[in-house]
Image (cartoon, rainbow, N blue to C red):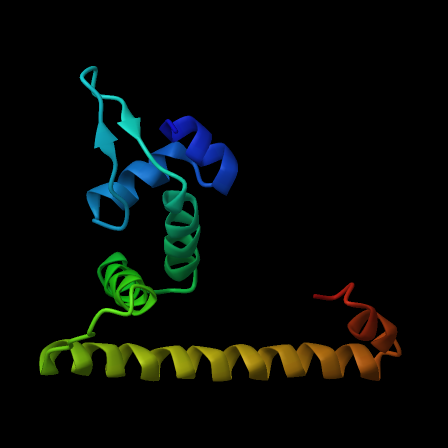
Length: 128
């Protein structure tokens, strides 16, 4: 599929898909006229890459995660240098901190809605 179709199927702008390719998150085949061509597996990879970046991971770290996931899915032996493990541990701690902050914010908003007698919005999901 061409980049436009990949964009339509993932909801990711073509410009972002090109950036992900520049960063090594995606790869494509190039035809003689230079057009990018993607296969079906790139739909999932692009969606996953986008989700990781949107969650706050750097593109460098998102590539590591995607590559590890690919190795695990292929049941290939997974290796990890000490340097990479330290980088991942640091990122994991940062993610945990962000999750704690988001949880605290969510709980404060839910409590406020309950106190203002609008708790039905929390239970119905309208506030989410």
